[in-house]
Image 1 (cartoon, rainbow, N blue to C red):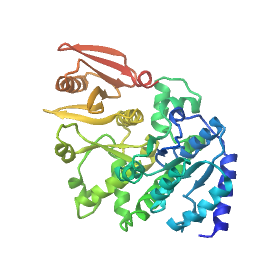
Image 2: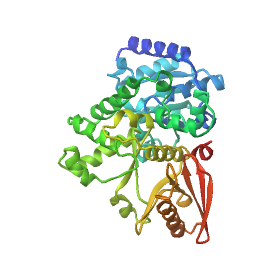
Image 3: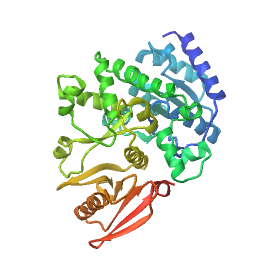
Image 4: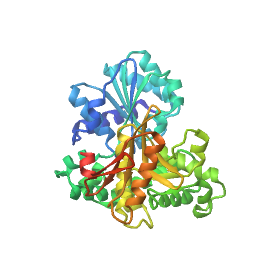
Length: 401
């Protein structure tokens, strides 16, 4: 790496950051605090607004920072030894706050971050891969990091961005437009297809040296087409065209690490039973489902369920589905091993599905010793009393806003 190239990249990126719009203030901003003894790590899918949050953070705190985004083609050959050149630039700048974007693309970056922490720099890192949150990282940084996750716009942020009122009509729009800021500005499908391609090729195929990109794409399309459904690696082998279920598991891991999908396990007190049971599929944003699936039927019930899953993720719940004795409940919400809420989701509660939805929730309440549960629908507001337990029915807009 040449020092002159690094200088040019840093200067160009600094100007770009200064000229960029700060946009809608994100809800996560209130939670961000840079600590001198810890690195603040913000992870999330590509294009969800991580760099914008950094910009908002800088302006809000009126701080001058040293900024470098490693996801720049001019830094393609950057390696561990080149951090010595970066040190020269940092020393010359005299800045004490360092913002590094996508630093995980450089092998061994953890050693450098730990060194800068030891030198009492404030450090904020962002990345589009969940390995930044891994236990391995915790070991290398000896626990000296605070983790935050950023997702596409929440429903509340969507309302502000689109200047809409809370209600079933805006929920419908959110279900189909999703929360990626860049897509909401342009409404161009190409923005989303390019995002999916970037993740599959740059973040997965290149990073993990996967040659059979076609099977990876087929799996991605299958998952997008089966949102809210159960999937099992052993049953997907022939569908995707791979020889081993372990390959499917490997692909699952990569897709989850990039925040493109999440596979939610069944609730069980046995870890082994939880791992062996089929998992339910959720895609990071409903707009991606609309462009990335090959056979997804217009099922607003599954889109609403997908929306609710990510709302719960934003609130840092541990999420499982409940399934026992033929009864199912969509979401078991836990924190630190304690079940806090039971949620069932259906677009419309009617005579055809009411018994199934209510009884599934009721069975979960009995199993966890809870007196109440919630059914989230599109429009309905109601209360059902059965067997001494209470089922509250709420419209999604009221539940989310």
